[in-house]
Length: 430
Image (cartoon, rainbow, N blue to C red; front, top):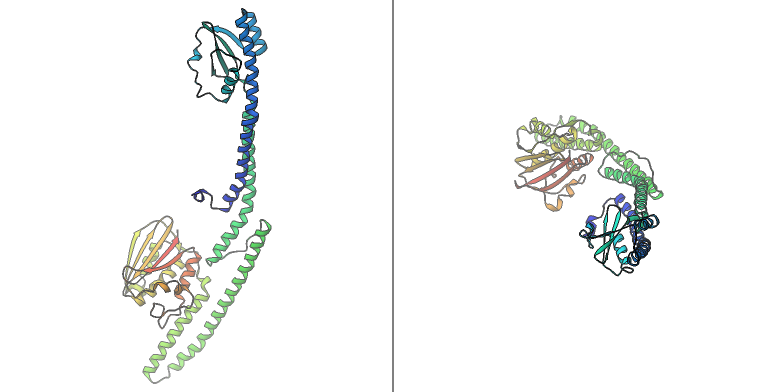
């Protein structure tokens, strides 16, 4: 249960590690101050005033005290003394609600005064009434005679110094965590296939080393991908020349059945080479032009290529939103091409909110087994009796689709559709 209340971020946990000892130390210091220094100071001040009151009270008992004598008491001890038959503050006395200052004074006074007495506080004055025959001897004196004004100063300085130390620690820790956040953000973007520029290496020695190693790794992987793409593009481009020659040679074939068969094979190979070239040149397909996803879906549905197919579009929720036009249209088109090749009916359900764009494409085809739904996203992977296994497919369609979605922080998942076929769920942040 405690873990759910603890911070999850590195900065929050580091601040907690620094903050907890500081607060614990302050609590220990306050406890010692209250139980030892402050309490002892209160007891000594209360004892001193109690002894003075006892001496003055004895004078009232043993001899007649006039106004001149009362004035001397005030001049010497800051204690005003007079007789009163029924002081008002006696009715207001509340032992349960009095603080440690009055409690300490009452405890010390009981050691010197045997008669009944009443203690009350109003404003900055302490009122004390001691029974004397049929009346009361009333004592009034400032509260600071039994209390020290340094306690709140001490606590204030302690709180202010704690806040200052915590702020300084927060600023230092924030600067230390910043390069770790930069490294984490760069790792996330690179893992999704997005462009990650070389960032400035900063922070502690270990963080600098990790950042440098990440940049080296990123550059190595980028070079390998570029080399692979260049090789694939070069091979695919070079193969176009012999394919063109094969087309020309095929024109001279007299057997119509053989000629038709060869034409189909050449066409399939040409389409596969186009997919290879598109896969190799994937980064060149990513433009920054934006479009509303509903408008993009209507545009795709009305395309000549899809008009003759049974495709339904259902808008469950519409909202203002913009997505990358080139990537979005390419992704949806790839999925629809697979769907119409393997099914008779396709239903597109879309939901656009402030946070996310959801596009679910259902079909009534054969679907994909659950144990193959992750594998079909691998480049060049094809399974038997699936929508990827046809004479044209190269096994790159879903791999390209997932890579394109990763570049805009999107996701794609496969489920079983209510139509009996496959459901392709796409989610793109708004």
